[in-house]
Length: 331
Ligand SMILES: C[S@@+](CC[C@H](N)C(=O)[O-])C[C@H]1O[C@@H](n2cnc3c(N)ncnc32)[C@H](O)[C@@H]1O
Image 1 (cartoon, rainbow, N blue to C red):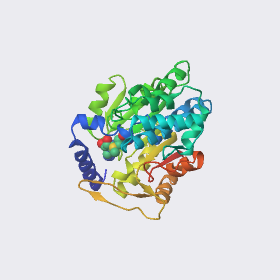
Image 2 (tube, helix red, strand yellow):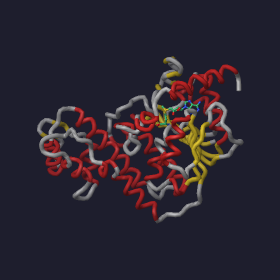
Image 3 (spheres, rainbow, N blue to C red):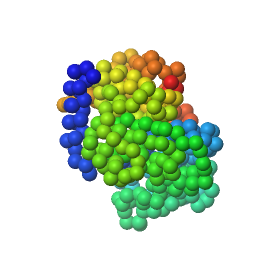
Image 4 (cartoon, rainbow, N blue to C red):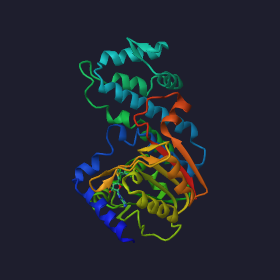
């Protein structure tokens, strides 16, 4: 590896090793980042399920995206002063087909989703769980896990040929935990790696039987075409542009078929906006330029701008991160 990338690797490792293990385990799976309701994590799980079963579960996937929009809307609502009576009023309005509950506007994607569900349903439960006095308690786990339970049950009866999957920058099994809990992991030959040893230690502690190791996206320790598929979340913005180009060529080199790549900070402009913070980067990547880098190694690069995708598919215009993109790539 070139000297400059060795130095960058050292600085990247230092950047993540400064956190303690408990922080690393929790900070990327909370609130809107919770992979049960984070659209990009959901799209990654759908990417894997489609590779295993084709189009079979399209309808369930659409319902899960709707669930995520409902949960994100409710989370936003709960951050404002809202009381249990107002949540009950929202439910009454939904039952009566109204789009306004005591002055609170109900987005059309909420009422449309409600109308696709039989009664009673998870939206009734979500709007009823709060005790009368307060809405400050967290949303109960069993409601957060609504689709985890459904997928686990649906996939339990399914068999498929195992596929090999690589996840670079896997953190503390942040997404893998849910890939496992949703019943997908047993169908995969999964390998996760991260530069930060505290992360892989956390991951191994949680999943002693799964394969987690320390490795570097700038020089992946694997032969060409080792893995059928690869997915990555939130790595490339943290690399210098030169290192990102190396990492992109590396993930494409070790992948035989398709990749699903999540970006949290991307824009439609012509230029990357480079921002150095201490020992790492927090770049805003140019979608076009990043796509062009992938196109050097891949035959098809499908770009999904999460905000536009939800707006065009569901009329949802209030995604929490307007700069989030997912690329689905065919080598
Ligand atoms: C923002 S976190 C994302 C973690 C996880 N993918 C997620 O979305 O929750 C970035 C991760 O990339 C890892 N990382 C940074 N540079 C890396 C490199 N060169 N090779 C492998 N992992 C790296 C960090 O240790 C950290 O776990």
